[in-house]
Amino acid sequence: MYDVLVVGSANADLTVRVERRPGAGETVLGTDLVETAGGKGANQAAAAARLGGRTALLARVGGDAFGELLLAAQREAGTDVAPVIVDAAARTGTAMIIVSPDGDNSIVVSPGANAALSPRDVAAAKDIIAASSVVSLQLEIPMESVRAAAATAEDACTRVVLNPSPAPEALAPELLASADPLVVNEHEARQLSGLTDGKPAEWAYALREKGARSVVVTLGGDGALVLDASGAQDVPGVRVKAVDTTGAGDAFTGALVTRLARGDALPDAARFAVRVGAAAVTRPGAQPSYPSLAELDELPE
Ligand code: ATP
Image (cartoon, rainbow, N blue to C red; front, top):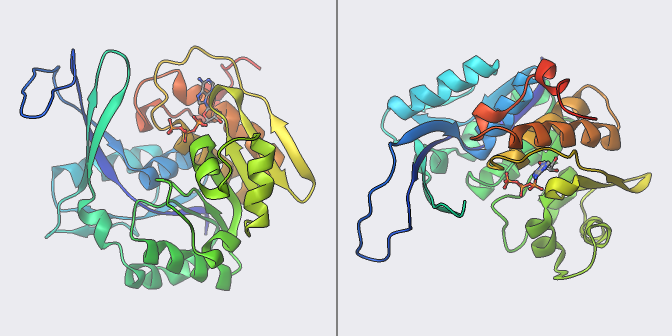
């Protein structure tokens, strides 16, 4: 029924640019507020759907205007939002983002409805999980719900892709063992492998040693490293003028899962995902920056 079911967070990103970050007790003036659709789960679903993957999202939003904004953005991307639970009593998750001229972000996240996405919600979506080729998971919802989604997918022989972000101290062994692949950026790779230095291939082998079935390490402008049964392979980056890297990792993962669902081998799916990640950094914002297949053709080889 679906190529990809994303189980994860949906946040309204509220962004203001400032000349300088306020100190404790201080007030500064900023630009007009910009509201965009974000949250790692919603971002990955939007990326997958925009690339033509048959995509559904299991998430929770509040019965407020931000919830409407997030649902509208998913519908526009082509995601089936039927599994999204609108909780009239909750507030939609928000990320309050302050951007200073050096490009550094300070972010406060209010999880809101995301914190209520429960193992019971996952159990109610059992048939959708079984009817999907891939379930894509991140860590912005309660950990017990992520574990329930991975276990339900395993029982149904649905492939699990896990992006352990924000980086936890450690992952439960059975959750790590369900990841095929585990998709990590450099920071997450170091944190979870326990290797503070070394090379991406070493982090990937260490993560496989710890139980992941396969591993992808994303490397910003340098592309990615893939480790599967055929060994480790570098996937070179695509040279572009980076304008805003927000949500690039989610664009990558959304693209990767779409191709895995269609039967691509992991290195081929990663080559496609590197192009999608590169396209996403050429435009501002997270979801608004995600390309369609037609837009990808305009990228250099
Ligand atoms: P973010 O937290 O900004 O969403 P991330 O740290 O999870 O990103 P990265 O490894 O920085 O993930 O980027 C993911 C993918 O996006 C890369 O594999 C690459 O395809 C693309 N990408 C990111 N930055 C650049 C860049 N400067 N030039 C080209 N491609 C990029």
